[in-house]
Length: 131
Image 1 (spheres, rainbow, N blue to C red):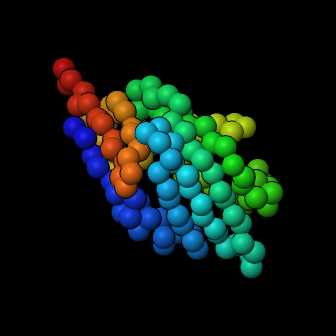
Image 2: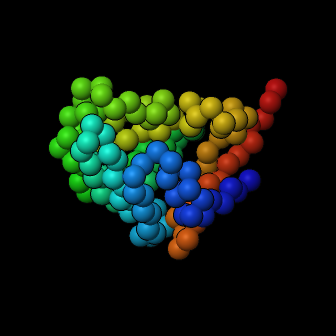
Image 3: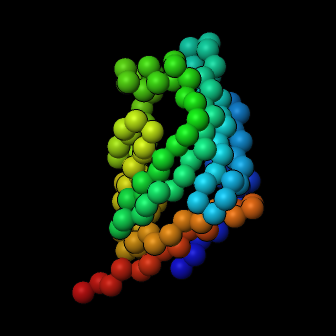
């Protein structure tokens, strides 16, 4: 099964949580993300190229290259900003997403592939065999 998400749909999902959100296609495994968050009368900018390195079961291993503001990094380290529960690990420039922790992601699916196209993302899922 393939789920198709347009970049506009993703922007609409994110727009309520961040001040500015932009998303661009780079190639079939990489996207560019820019967003700004206002917190405590300050603006924090995150400007990244995010690359899908590997997918194992329902874990997505991402690598990012770009800049996260110093204040945003401090806020994450101090626990002032909480990462979503599906971000299992953040280490250096790598992030591991565990889709089993996304409330709306069914446990009967396994993630097979994520591909970025000119204006949308394709997420390919396999249905698990139930014994």
